[in-house]
Image (tube, rainbow, N blue to C red; front, side, top):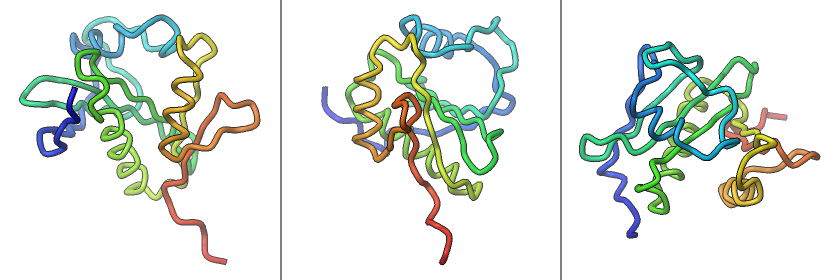
Amino acid sequence: MPPVSPATLTWIREEPPVWDDDKERIVGGTPDGTFEGLDFEAGALVPGDWWRVEQNGKVVGYGWMDTSWGGDAQILLAVAPEARGRGIGTWILDRLEDEARARDLCYIFNTIPPRHPDPEGLAAWLKERGFVPSPHDRLLRRRVAPPPAA
């Protein structure tokens, strides 16, 4: 599939974020172990900050951020199966970085769940985008703010 044109994508903050059919289809429809703890009833409020990505009015992905970690933010992203391999995941990651930077956060990080169906593939994808693994290689993070002045 050809790469998606960023001009065709829309980044929409959800306020308040609720579990809906699109989240169930894209986030809930991933293989077991991909995301842990994201099992909600339809219409339920969901924790953290959520953004949906639309292309021509259709939801093609989600970005999620939890800033309860002090100067860092945990992130997740999901792309609809039919839209994968076109650069939408990288586009979402860049938007999440922008959101973190706007909040004066230092790092964004992703923890690969122990039951993730492709931990090596996800780690490689994140490393290609500037994430650095921790000693145990499950937590990868990327600096979004410049280092403090000496």
